Image (tube, rainbow, N blue to C red; front, side, top):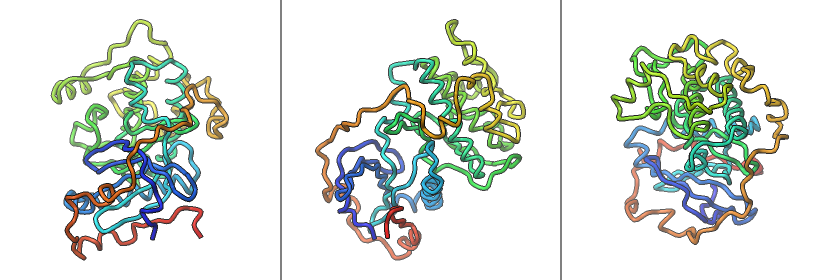
Length: 328
């Protein structure tokens, strides 16, 4: 069992329906990690147990494969009321945080897009569809490389022609076929990439409005392209935001290879990128700001989680724990 006391919680990073994320430091090694903390009762009540184990397994796959374009697992452990997933800490924050001031330079858009392509390609080669790609779920590591994160909505066992019945994820990034009720394929990840590239290049969403307006825009309208937008960027966005999934860029059996070979990516040296031999356009400072948040009882066991959890509930988390890779 991994003691929670091994970690010093340094900084609160964010919160969602899943729980809380903290930046923490391993006391013995000084290694910084991001720890996602989730309440067991919340997980069981919302039937998220399968999603929890899935996220842990994809993070482990990333760790085992040494893939630099997915966040990877450090360890997983639990206490009576909570489960914890410790992951690589992304010193550069989320891609969304970099879009707060508008459009990115073309070099940054190209670089991050290439990283995302390699991340999607790896998932699809392993029969995994992400289904919730968006800037909030893409992080920038210490070397400035973009990594895919948040794998709880992934679908596994999906091949080239397999159809998934139930849409999920963030509606702003849904492909048109996700509204149809007739199922969708892995090409929805490439549509989401098109939305993300548009955001990076233009500084706003290609489709917006309330749910009904958004649905109509995604199904029936084309994005507006600023007059000064680079021609190559405009073309790849149009190819990725093709409303017919059978003609969308990335729809062929070779999937990511088709996207990599598109003219927009001609400047990218893929082997060098995979080996992280290209200097990123932005490299985060190594001086991480430390908050005064400590590893106190309020973090480990919040006041609303003081009652004991039933043996039946605890059984759902048997086998969840996973040691660090370098453990003996």
